[in-house]
Image (tube, rainbow, N blue to C red):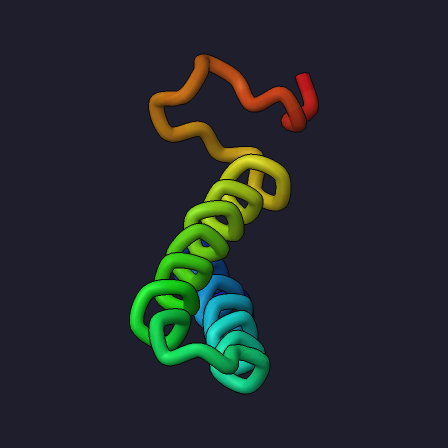
Length: 73
């Protein structure tokens, strides 16, 4: 059984973002951080994780350049 790359990327993103959000909600003390801090941090982590999964792990490019710098030539 093989999981498609798109599904694997979604699963990895979900796990990473839920982990960051859970830790953020546990560690945060100020109410403003619950409203703004944790969602912004989760969003940034999602973007970075998505970029990492796309380029480093799978060697895909989506309009950023012709070739991935990590892909074998």
